Amino acid sequence: METKKYVIAMDQGTTSSRAILFNKRGEIQSSQQREFRRITNQRETTVIWDASTGRPVYNAIVWQCRRTSDIIDKLKSDGLSGYIQEKTGLIPDAYFSASKIAWILRNVPGVKERAKRGELRFGTIDSWLIWNMTGGRVHATDYTNASRTMLFDIHKLCWDEEILDYFGIPASLLPEVRPSSSYFGETERFGGAIPICGAAGDQQAALFGQCGFNPGDVKCTYGTGGFMLMNTGREPIHSQKGLLTTIAAGEEDRVSYALEGSVFIAGAAIQWLRDEMRMIRTSPQSQTYCEAVPDSGGVYIVPAFSGMGAPYWEQYARGTIVGLTRGVSKDHFIRATVESLAYQMNDLLSAMKEESRLSLSTLKVDGGASANDFLMQFQSDISGVHIERPQCIETTALGAAYLAGLRVGYWKDRNEIRSNWACEHEFVPTIAPENRKKLLKGWKKAVKTAIFWAQEEENDTV
Ligand code: ADP
Image (cartoon, rainbow, N blue to C red; front, top):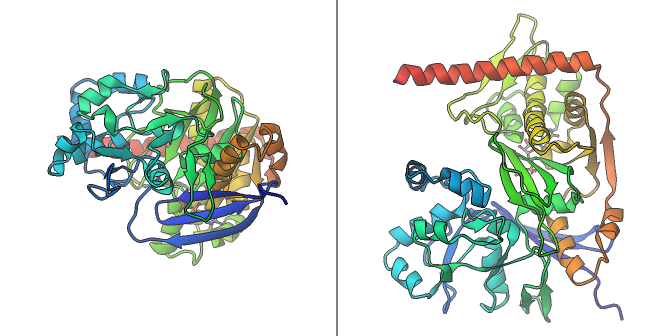
């Protein structure tokens, strides 16, 4: 009788929980998904619970929540930004768990005292799930999730006492931190004892699922927002351009690092075309319009609806449209919007290449909008890179399954995993270099315009 047949991965998202069963070839055998209304997780989301009853002392504070912005403003005015970035690789922000924990300690009656007495536990959602699946026996997390708390020293691989002190967080609250691929415990929740052997944050799991094992490997996710991660190898690279330094998922105690950059508005711009502009009925339709014209007619759309992130960091920038003429049609408008996803990703990619000094061979893509062939071809053209879109786009769950399967010997090594990776479509640059240069120059001018608008706005208010 064959005993180890499948690996099950749970992808605990912000709006749905998914469980996916993979076979040895990394193919999906079965999957179940359930949406939920009360938003919870993804990496930084914070839960504090009672160690003896397992009951949360307060609702989970979701990663998007900005209620702790003032705690971060105070930290910045206390001059701690440099220290935080050096130790944790992160730019201080309410997004990460640290200020969310501090908020619960300060605002929920009795919690601070109970935490001091060692009665409470903190976890990101992975820890919370592991705790519950092991019947409260294991309080642990992995390096990738720990590296998003803004409490973890990514060089020494331990919780940083000085940061804990600053926030008044007792060490007894914190989980033990292990490699992403290691034995966390056993669960009996699904009938029989099943070992839990993999845990990772979604973006790092996706990089692993895309076989981004080597320095210079990059994966790019085109979801509602956009995420780019580059494996930078054993040495962490500290960014001057606002990229984050984070720990990549892996099997060993000695970790690899990654640079991470995000774009606030990616697929969301396509939703805007659909829901507000009402120019398309479905997102995939955008491709047909893009292909109806040879170019954007000189139009650039910078979808800075909520400011601009890396590498510009201009929170007051707003959406900007430039280059309109009488001849501009709906096709051009849609095409300019779709192209903006590629331009923004290209800005991240350029920053990563410059800071890491690594040359990039191939860009692996995933996420909903990566299904748009026009967008992928345009990305390949303006970035001058070879793009590969995998057959399995559930790269987050696949990465978690690989981490677990490696630990139990279901997969022998990374080479075996690599041989599972199958390309569904590849895109190679076909554009003339001078045309690429011209397009990029136009984009830079459009971004300058969006930033100029923001700065004028600021001046007016002073
Ligand atoms: P998330 O995980 O962030 O919810 P997904 O990876 O499911 O996002 O991607 C959904 C996004 O991709 C939506 O914003 C949608 O508008 C966009 N999208 C989906 N298909 C296409 C397409 N063919 N062309 C352009 N955008 C698309």
